[in-house]
Amino acid sequence: MLSTYVTEHWGLRYPILGAPMAYSGRGRLANAISNAGGLGMLGIGSRDSLEYIEQESAVARGDGSGTKFGIGLMSWALETRPELLDAALAQNPFLLSISFGSIRPYVEKAHRAGVHVATQVSTRSAAVAASEAGADLIVAQGTEAGGHTGSVGTLPLLQIVLDSVDTPVAAAGGIAAPTGVAAVLAAGAAAAWVGTAFLLSPEADLTDEARRRLTDADETQTIHTHVFDRVNQLAWPPEFPGRALRNGFAERWHGHEDELVSNPDEVARFRRGADAKDYEMTSIYAGQSVAMLFEQKPARDIIQHLGDGAERLLRGRVQTLLKGQ
Image 1 (cartoon, rainbow, N blue to C red):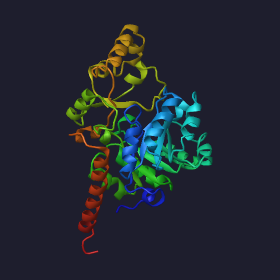
Image 2: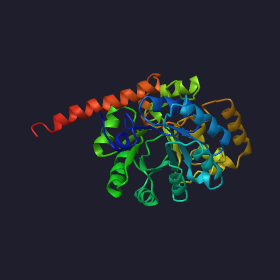
Image 3: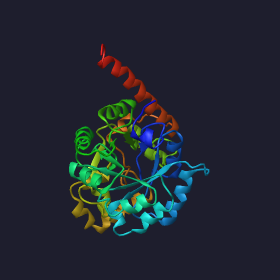
Image 4: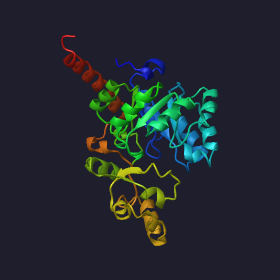
């Protein structure tokens, strides 16, 4: 079996954590990942209701058997909606991920509630600040990741963060196969933080058309853009554009966001398309590892494939690399 900080101290079968993905990663997916031996996470959007957190946490928790799960929040959203933190802690998650801003105002309260705290970082300075603030897990999130992310690649960022903090580190961004899991664990990560790999699973909350587009996409067909945040009037910090599948709307307005939001007819056209789930208009957030999505598989099968496959690769590779040692 693979042995890292999260398997030894958190009791996970596999050192794989499901990334918190708002809207697509709900309670059903979190429950499936956790029951397969990883740790599933709920992604909470800035406009989600407190009732939604309670409802989806109940699904993630399952039949009352004590299934561990996590909840992902955004620091910038907590600044105007502090009630999201209280609602999340009231569900007694095993892990609370607070990212895209400082965690310092929230760590003590989470720890008093007996909840572990993780945060995604995209720079050395953010990693050091998170460690000093008391994070239990720091997630080095490379720009290959789907959804909102910084501008540094996973491999250089992972090395930088591992060299900068003593806190356990997970790696995120571009991990969707056993080779990726094996690579980050061999480098010293305590876990792989995986999102895009689960998007085709039946437990993810996506339409059939979104799944078709994900299946058809390759590694060149994502865009790192502010377009969707600006047109949706979401207050994401400018250093965190969102990585989504390319479409006609994003191609037209990427780099011209100020012009877009000052055009009420175009904003209205986008809203109509989003309501109709027209994916030439609205977003499907996914990382560059989308090229490795070929077929629908249950989350349990994905976890086992990633974890068992990484173990086989590491065992064989160590024997080859250290032959005669």
